[in-house]
Length: 430
Image (cartoon, rainbow, N blue to C red; front, top):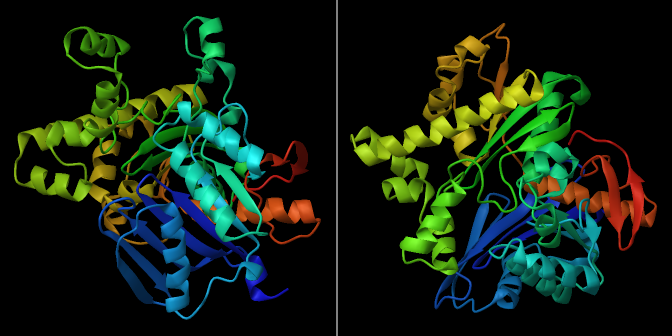
């Protein structure tokens, strides 16, 4: 095979942005990648990285179709045109699969329609995901398009974990249950933990803390997710950059009755004006750290609330799992904010959980252990790579359909969906 036949273009389309990477699924490297921002605004911006160089564009980007054309042109400008014949697939991150989709699926018009129909469950995400898919299908005819779902890894949750205690007929009619999100990251990171430690994935319990602008926690027993913090939507759970996380439903009723807010106003409040932003006025952890260092009282409270909520989930997941062997930090804050990791772990020494200050202070892009030697619970930092996980999932599904062996890294244990048919896939820790 030529070098390009092991490459997958991964696209993550948002309402006003599009991230992409061209990934070699054999060696796990990103050949090129970029970010297109401010789609739909008067002036947009795009940046493209290849071979250590960056190419950029500033100008009108009125829609996602234009964004895809700009992406193609940036590949040309960098000296490596994006040739459709040299791609195994285009892999798409799709936030919500509902009860319809679990494993990766080849996208056709019917699947695209179903992804759009699931927008009621993820109105901020699925419409943009579907738009990106539609434009990629037009731009790259003949290249298999594969959807990989954020919710997939958490389809293993037991009924006790995914069931909300509301009227069961209403819940069924409205598809109300815990779905969980960031699943691609949680699965990838938990698999990397096993690889780094040289332990069978099936032999230990983990808690994974995905801490970025969006944040979630998961409890994983033997490689299988048994609990997670996000629920019907990505709003539940931990405190996030602009999202509230857990909130008494009575507070929502109170705001509807007396706060002068309608449903759209509540949506904006809880998703865009809450979390760290609502508490401190900033959503970026670097800005929050500066305010805390300057003695800002609101910022200090915001950081305390953030860390307290995570500690509470760690305690809950210790009970769910009956004990934990490894706790792992990942994503932007989890990987880079040593002081936040230390704050979260402080006070958990009685549970066998602690970090070594010197190890925790090391800045590195490599997987590493930050707990002391001999600690009962291993604490780790593992950089996430959702794009690589999506690329491998897409390549594995395409090779399965074609009857070839492109990659030894399937997306997840279980079954890979091919249209309305299913086929078994081997278990993997990637």
